[in-house]
Amino acid sequence: MLLLAFALTLVAAVLVSALAERTVLSTAVLFLLAGAAAQLVLRPDVRAIVGPLAEAALVIVLFTDGAQLTTRELRQGWRLPGRALLLGLPLTVAGNALLGRYVAGLGWGEAFLVGAALSPTDPVLAAAVVGAREVPRRLRHLLNVESGLNDGLALPLVIVLLAVLRPERAPLGAALGEVALGVALGVALPLAVLRLERSRFFGAAPLYEPLSAVAAGLLAYAAAAALHANAFLGVFAAGVVVATTAPRIARAFARVGEVAAELAKLAAIFVFGAVLSPRLLAEIPLSGYAYALLVLLVVRPAALALALVGGGLSWREWVAAAWFGPKGFSSVVYGLLILASGLPRARALAHLVALVVAGSILAHSSTDVLVARWFRRDQRRSSGGATRPNATSSARS
Image (tube, rainbow, N blue to C red):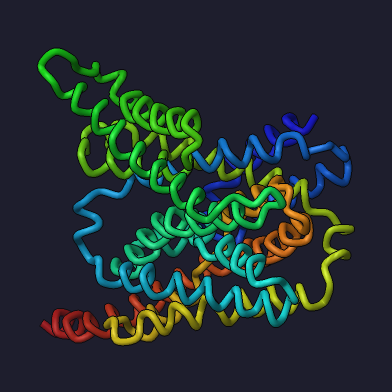
């Protein structure tokens, strides 16, 4: 029955997707609310599927994100995304952790775990801004590249903290070794596959070109899992290798990957909604609600505003970049991984992540269209002011 509910929600999302692009209606909110409604009506036991779904969705999205990061995109306009990732991301994690410690009352390890889980951003919840031509290109590029990389950059910290905070605590060195081995496999194995594909003895038919990328990513993931390395970082590294060394294969995979990643994100948000419940929200103390508000309204805006000082953005771009740090798919999956981790306070930590993500989905996905219109009006005023004298002179002549 849960699958039927998801299928009906997917049909509804497809039918209203064109309307959602023009209005504050959000497909992410639709799946979140549909999942919550399915929990209230059907009362399914989703505990068995939380872990496997989170892992499968994360693998698909990490590989797709990595495969979209071309060297040309990274070289062009790297200054602003670099500031957001190298300054804004650490400031966001640190700010979230400080609030987790002193507002939510978490231990330092838990505070940094939740802070890292809430640090990635999701462009799906700012689609109207990222996809609007009226929005300055450098702002769209900043939000796109930042969201494409920050989930992969936050993941090592989440993985290491999950390992060292578990009751059967893994040594820090072992956790870091798993991360390093995962990245090494994610680089070496796809390079070998792609080199074979380009050799004079082998070659992929056009129909199989998208599968070349899938095969390289799947091999990296499976090998990392078999060798007890970090498979998530392995598959992200594999995607980056495909994008940077085999652009033809990456282009062939792009459309398939985008559809698969979108479906994975919506499925994760739907199950995330099913995990939410009025009882869950009632279990969260007032300090948790204060934490959520401060994370959304203070930490990310302040961190990115500081990181972008002197970056040459207009004040409108600066405000929009600071505001649009939506907590979406990656935070949902990290929250589900925390829930399935076996940590002593896993449920409370996952609830805190859930509260912030739910608030972010509602706030950011309902303001992206408004901000896009804001830029559109500004562009019309600017172009109108520039063209009015010409129009007048032509009328006179």
